[in-house]
Length: 509
Image 1 (cartoon, rainbow, N blue to C red):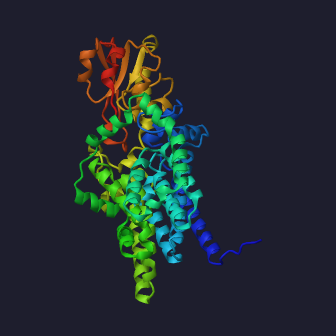
Image 2 (cartoon, rainbow, N blue to C red):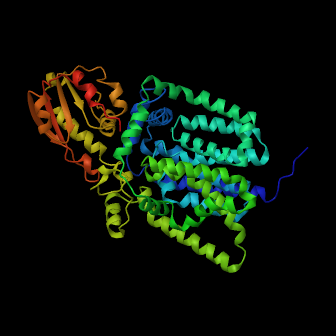
Image 3 (tube, helix red, strand yellow):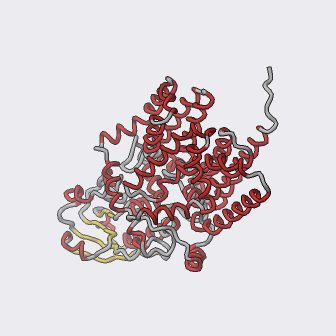
C-alpha cells in the first residue's frame, strides 16, 4: 500500500534542504581563508595522542581534528564538519517549525534567524567543541517535542543517542539536560519521564558517555578544576551589558523572535506543551551567569527559541502592513548580518579587517581579560601568527650548538604555542607546557639539562639558570597581543631540574 504524501510537505522539505545546503556552502567558501585556530592546533595534537578524555574536553573533537588533519586539506578540511553543522541547523530549525504547526513563513523565519545570527555564523567558523552545540541542543528539543506530540518512542531513543554523542564532544550538554529535566518536572511534560523509552535513551547516553567521565574520574576531574579557574579568567560582565550583547550577537532584528519564543508557550494554548523548553532555557541562563560564562555559552538556546517565536508570530502576519513589516525586519536582519559577518567569518584579509573594525567601531565584547590590545577580534587573531611563532623558535633553536640541543627542552606558556611548535616546528623536540593536557603529558620522554623558554620576562628566568642567553623575541602583526614581545631565551643548567619543578607549572585554565 502506498501512503500519499502531502503536496505541501515535499516542497517544504526541499526548501529546508536547499536552505541548509546553501548555508553550508557559504561557510565552506571562507573555511580555508585563514590558518588554523589556536584550539584547532591543540585539538590536532591531543587527537594524535588518543585517549578517552582530556583535561579540557571529551575525546570527540580532538580525534576528529587529528583524523581530518591527516587528509592534508589544512584549515578547510577541519572546518567541513562545522560548515555542515551550520547548514544542518538551518534545515532542522525549519523542520522543527513545521513540527510545531508552522507554515512556510514560520519555517522561513526560523531558518533565516539561524542562518544570519552573527554568533551562530561565527561559532561554526572553526572546528571547536561549541560548533556542534546549537545543532545538538536544538535536535534534543525537537526529539522531545516529537516524542510528546506524536508518541514516538524512537525519538526518545534517538535523543539518548544524540546526548551520548554530544557528551563526547562537550560536557555542557549536561546544562541543557538539567534545564530540560527541571522543565519537565514542573510541567505536564513530566509524562515523558514515565515512558520506558526515555530511560532506554538515558541508558544509551550513559553507555556512550561513561568512558570520558571515567577518564575524568581517574585523573581527579581536572575539567572541574579548569572550570573553576576559567571563572576567574573570564571578564566579569554585568547583567545589563551582557543582555545588550546577547541582543547584538544574535542580530537585533531577531530579538522579537526569541523574546516571543520565551513568552509564547505561556500565552498560546497550542504551544503550552513547550513550556518545559523555556524553563530549561532559563535554568541554563542562570547557570551561565552564576559561572561568569562567556556570551557564546548561551548560543545553543537560541535556535529553539527562534523556532517557537517564529511559529507563534507567523499566524499574525496576514494583512499587507504586517507583511511589509516582516519584509522590512528581514531586510534589516540581512543588513545587520552583512555588517557583522566580517567579525564572524574570515571574509576580509587581516589588514582589511583591521581597517573595517576601526572604521565601523564594531568589535566583539571582551570576554577574557587577556584579550585587550589585540588589533583583530580574538576569533580571527587566534588564526594568525602561529607559523611566525614557530619560525622564530626554530631560528632560536638553530643558534644553540648541536651537542647542547641534545639535552635541551623547549618550554612555552600555553597549549596554543606548544601545539604550534609540535605541528609547524622543524626538527624541534616535543614542546613542553604546564597548560591543560600538556601538563599531564609531562616531560614527554625528555630529561633536559637546559631549557629554551618562551615567556614574558627574561629576568624571571635568571634565578633558575646558571646562564641566560636571549636568542629571539616573538612577533606577528595580527596575532593576539599577549603572544607578542615574549622572549625566547636559553636557560643553561636549570636548577632545580624541570622534573622537580613540573608540579608547580600546572596551569589548568
